[in-house]
Amino acid sequence: MLRHFLRDDDLSPAEQLEVLDLADELKKQPFRDTLAGPRAVAVLFEKNSTRTRFSFEVGIAQLGGHPVVVDGRSMQLGREETIEDTARVLSRYVDVVVWRTFAQARIDSLASVSSVPVVNALTDEFHPCQILADLQTVRERKGTLAGLTLTYLGDAGNNMAHSLLLGGVTAGLHVRVAAPEGFHPAPWLLDTVAKRAAETGGSATVLTDPHAAVDGADVVTTDAWTSMGQENDGKDRVGPFRPYQVNTELLGRTGKDTVVLHDLPAHRGQEITDEVLDGPASAVWDEAENRLHAQKALLVWLLERR
Ligand code: CP
Ligand code: NVA
Image 1: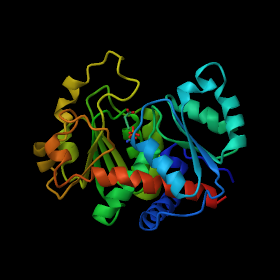
Image 2: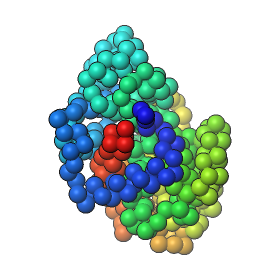
Image 3: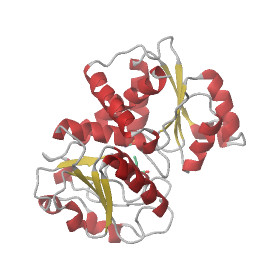
Image 4: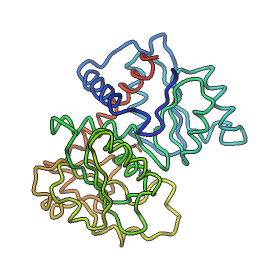
């Protein structure tokens, strides 16, 4: 059966675990002939990228495949060709389509007519590939996932917060997000997260107090205060978000041996300080590396299970 990975809950809890186990295997043994031929994978970007671009391109090559990496704005899609017609054509050339775009509705449209798996490489609403890498990293550091508390500080209405909530409760985490009023997750998302949490024993909590949010946290993570596409929306973020900065003082309040994550790119001195990012609690470079392993695992899972 054709499967896509458009949101974190496109994998069941058991399936997410299969992908994470496979990611650990591929980290030890990187080469596999899943895409030998070579079979091609389209990797399309309508927003900037460093990690996602390199990790997919390298990962596809390590699976024996041929990555076709294209700036989406240079495609006919950037003129008048529809998303659906683009999907119909790409499905005739490639075995997977990976897309970084704006509204989730765009990737949903692509997937609705694609005859090959579609993978979300970040939309305005979700960043599910990043969360697979984050979970792999947490498990490496903590030895387990279910039952841990992960706190996210920053824009809790953005793609990272949504995916950490949905992917985190899928793994049985207790996910707390803390943000100023006006930057909280969408109610529809919280309903979906609550249903998934009820299956796994995880939980989701939305707070405004950053100190209460980090108390007892096993993992603290953050993200850009201004996401791609929000640069000119006229909202003041620096003032409201300042109390949510991940710094040494705030980290000291967890009362635990906390692991710090950041999906990167970091805005040093804004959402996170140099001292924390470069300090002993930081797992951010492993996290970035794990994008490679986790996404390869996802591709293998999508292609070999069919
Ligand atoms: N974390 C992440 O997705 O990084 P890029 O924007 O560089 O791909
Ligand atoms: N929330 C950020 C994530 C970047 C990887 C953005 O969308 O710009």
